Amino acid sequence: MIIALEGTDQAGKKTQSVMLARALKSQKIKTAMFDFPDYSTIIGKEINNYLHGKRKFPPEIIFMQQTDGKN
Image (cartoon, rainbow, N blue to C red; front, side, top):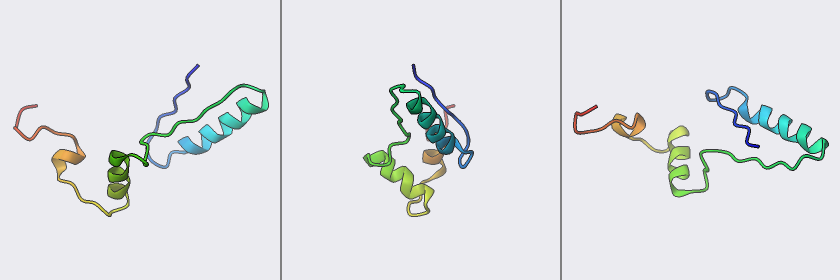
């Protein structure tokens, strides 16, 4: 089974995930957690740098818009 929690930044996804994992483990249910983005990858490091104001990107990159004017 896969359980995915989604929400905006600082909504408590990590807190709820940890609480859920603890509850499942206490019932002897095998549990694994995964976070996205993975900040250890090259792209993840760029995202982390942007989120912490260490990297700037043009709007086309931030919003993943096409730069050729086609939508």
